[in-house]
Amino acid sequence: MKTPLEEQAHVLGEMGLTRFFRRMMAEKPDVLMKNVTVEAVRPGRWIRVEGRWVRNFGSDSFLGLDQHPRVQEALVRGVRQWGTHNGTSRAFSSVAANVEAEQRLAAWLGTEAAVMYPSVSLANMGALPALATRHDVIVADQYAHNSIEEGMRLAKARGVRCAKFAHNDPQDLERTLRALRPYRRAVIALDGVYSMSGQLPPLRQFQHIASLHDGFLYVDDAHGTGVIGEQGRGTVWETLGHYENVVVIGSLSKALSCLGGFAAASRKVVEILQLRSQPLIFGGPVPPPYLSALLAVLDILMSPEYVQLRAALDANVRCFVEGARRLGLVLLGGCVPIVSVLVGPEDTTLQAGRFLFERGYYVQSVVFPAVPHGAGVLRIQINSNHTDDAIHGLVEALAELKRAYPLPEAEANVPSCSPPVLSVTAIPA
Image (tube, rainbow, N blue to C red; front, side, top):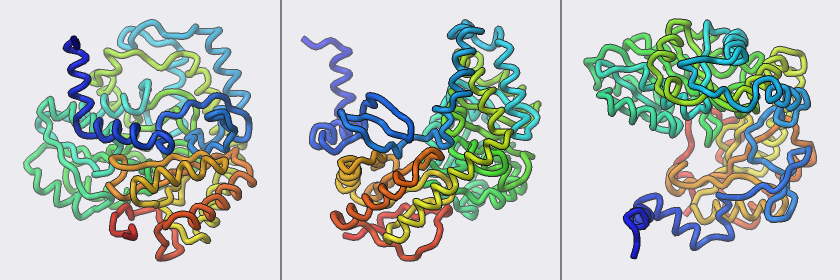
């Protein structure tokens, strides 16, 4: 006899997307590379999966700092100095390394203050609800990160009205804000870099619209932190040159290769987050060893070595993009280390990922619901420590893939960093 828990699991397994993924796992176990186990790693972005060594183009440690000796040594020092955990919520106390890390983060970014969360997802689920009341509204780009949507759900449960606007569309943002009147303030939430396409938002236009409609920008720049702009300060600083009327969410665990996320803004705004953001009050902090590692990373970001790392990364991105464009592939992005190759149907996208894996290259096959139905992509993440032969080898493997599968053809050989081309109309029948 099944227990109520087992019966509930059965019911949930037959619902919506859960049923969809369970069916895919049952029907396509050979091509569905969604739960791979990395058995070992070695320098040069090699990973061992299923007993074979392949080049890893699925890592978001864009600057290669996860393998940097200074960062690794700092992590070990942090364990010896602080142990493995803070032992309490930050509502009660913080280790000195936490306070220093936040001060150094703010100084690096050029903001007045910053506060750290254990992850970017927790930052979005904590900061968004904390910044709005039932007198305010939150409007988000339709392709904003899932954690922004989760933060909106929590805010909505508190009585905040929430809505979405068409991707990267300033006119639709204005229409949406007008339709939501009356309200006190509007939180306009979007990504600084869209993680599935590498595309960028029209921040200047959005900032202008915010100023006209009693709003402010809330930018999740998790995928721009460390890889865009001077010293890697990100999309907001590179585009606007200031942080006025903006809250920036960033990642410590992608390009910075540590652990956690952060919110940065004026000192007054950060104080409000510290008092109203539930994950900060009731959750645990970033473990102290990673704070020590972060301090080492910030040293690197502010040093001439960062210039060298960025130069290597940018050169690798250019090399890959130019090679992929020569093949006539439809690329999404191309201005940041995330470049997606449009494939189309879900089956073909999964098969394409496996095809490249069999030729020694691991990339991420992304299908619905992460992208629109029928608009599957191969998400390729370029790192500074990818070698020339790895980049050229992946381009050659993509050429083989194009000969083997009917991939969409690019209409023009131009960069596509914004706005979107994720559309089923671009997919051949």
